[in-house]
Length: 89
Image (cartoon, rainbow, N blue to C red):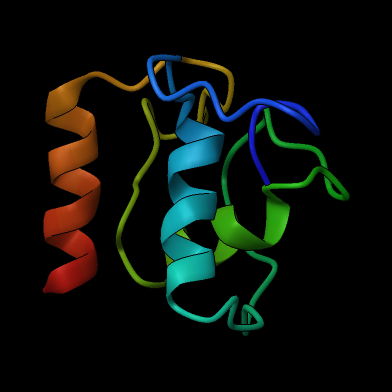
């Protein structure tokens, strides 16, 4: 949907929550089959919640640690490539 209603911001940073949401939407926004996760920094109802659940189910992410997803952390190129690789596997 863009950074705002009128801007796309192609040079902006992407956060981990945004990247898994991009991948989830590209997959057709499938409904997660489980609500199980170990992340203490993820709140139900956030825009990325279902995307994060889907990414965990599909082993696209295991988190930054076993208990943190770090949704607001900017993704570096290595993290994005890892998400993409795991999504394609």
